[in-house]
Length: 134
Image (cartoon, rainbow, N blue to C red; front, side, top):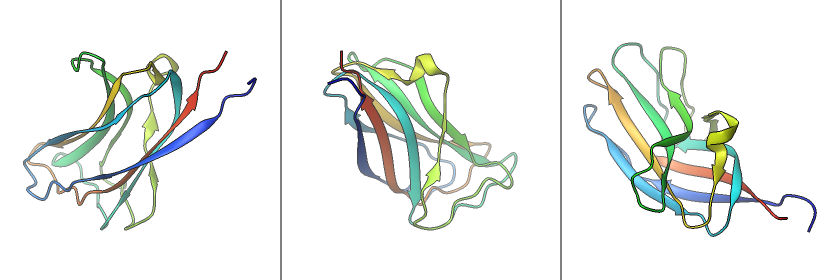
């Protein structure tokens, strides 16, 4: 094989309805090495961003030992950063080196409150990974 082939992995993520709470969810274990090329989040209801008291969502590579902290993609819901119910919202990818994943690594979705926070209604996470073939 000479071209990279991408696979989109969809995972439902749970809501964080209490605004001051956080939720970390393991969403995918990589079967082979690859490069994350896109991350989207389609919330079940709209999120209206706010400054000071807000929420951040991130896809983090926890590695094979479960202790990794490499941020693959992240989005903070500041004022004017919103979602529309059931419409995929692109999550900003990190630097190129952080997009590489190896076989066996676990990806974790993190929904974190900032200040007193805002609610996260949950929804559908999609992670697209292009397999690295040599």
